[in-house]
Length: 622
Image (cartoon, rainbow, N blue to C red):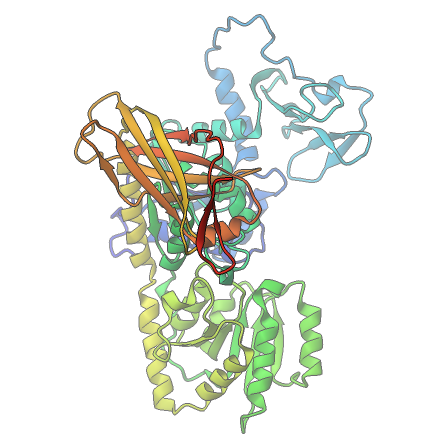
């Protein structure tokens, strides 16, 4: 806890955590977001508002539940768009109307359900009244009207704004207390941005965005007084073992092409930041800040600990691979004179399969499924060791929580968290990724270690966990926010780019190098600290996915021409497979970026470079 409760460490201004929705039961990402918000309030001295945008949860009831469970505390609160919307409508109604020179009605798409007597309506569940209209197929949503508690129309949201009854075009119309239209947006993002403007009221603000559903539109929220940081919570690769250029997860595909739209991007580990940098270069402010934890969770003694019992806290899903832990316990017990036990905290789709596996392995007396609990971390003080066998993690806060309680983590060396936290054999154990037999051997060796060595490891684990204290982590956030705010105040230099020549070369190792000669035309001279930065982007068709590299330096001749070179690793070319990629040059000076399509002159009878059957270079001029 901040020793001086009146001291403020976080930058002046309002602070927000941005997510789409807050369920009453949630997993790691939401837990980490709420914990960070509480630590900002307690250690950073700044209250935090958690912003939510969904229209189907009763937040008036949820606030009480989360407060009772300790997820909300003094200095943290939840704001919801739909709870605020009536007051926002009243505020808009009180503002002077803007004169319009357009002869077209400003609310041409406004057609509330009350004016459509033949429409078949469906009442939706939720905290406020909502009526929906669907297409004839009964599935395609065409309109939702939202109502105030007094029954008046609050907002009419049409998904058939171009032609009534035909899906296409969006129109969201806000109404005053009398049900008359006062403002219209052509997209949900427009409504969201207006709500943020209403909440901020022009104040300086800092946003930390925590999920993909809000990240896409928050990247478009560009305000001089708003610093927007995106927190990467999850592993961004479907199979991290396949390399940095391998397939992205669905959420990363949506968000990562927009990373430079944020004032800063925060990764949980340096390893993940390095992999993303190899894929995209770094065309903005990136930071590495781990998840924090409360020091109060550490136990004072180990007297109540069961020395031959471990625990695994995880959702029972395919990605968490809890069956690996069960199999490892079984294998360890085939070699031990006294059995080792395991308590599994969590629930999910794999529960019935795990129950069957435990029975088949005759481990019902040793392995217990404890179900979902809201405070699984409190059980680390009772266990001797913990297991983590996921396919991937972005950090693995559960490891830190285990170490803080003196519970020794025995985990797969998976991307990206464990190796950033654990020193093998000192404060925990790193096991070869996916190797159940090695996991079993490590468990067996640990439970038979001399007591003094075990106690030494437990103390080392607690000491390492202190590095992730809320106080330390909040200080890192303060530095990142200040740096991002300073970068936002840095002005760019307007410029145009003229590409005079370009080339594409293959290397013997399977790599690719793009070269260009160009001129910069500046609106003002470049100061010494504003050296231009050059990037080359390969954007895959169709869609927004791309790979990008920074130039390996550049030269400038006496005539003012820049020569730049961009090497792409062979892994990138292999990952692109049979795709077609468009080539772009990005030139950044300060905070101004110019994107130019890379030209290539058509050459008649262009030579074709190819490898012979013996792997040698030949050129065909045919």
